[in-house]
Image: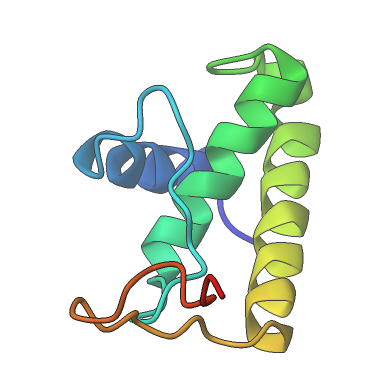
Length: 99
């Protein structure tokens, strides 16, 4: 287990570096997601759910455990989903023919 506060503080630095202030980025994409992006998204999710930007010391352990769980679940999900393909820019988005 990490020292108290280190996981959240490291993820918070990534959170601001990735400019993810308002919305969580889509992590399922052809180039994949970095561990830092997944951690930052987990942190943002737990912040939103809990209503805490930075929890009080008495809530820190539960907060960090939740971030860890969301991070693990996100990695598991991304491993199991197919990687989206890049659409050919010359291909029309709607390929159905009309008659």
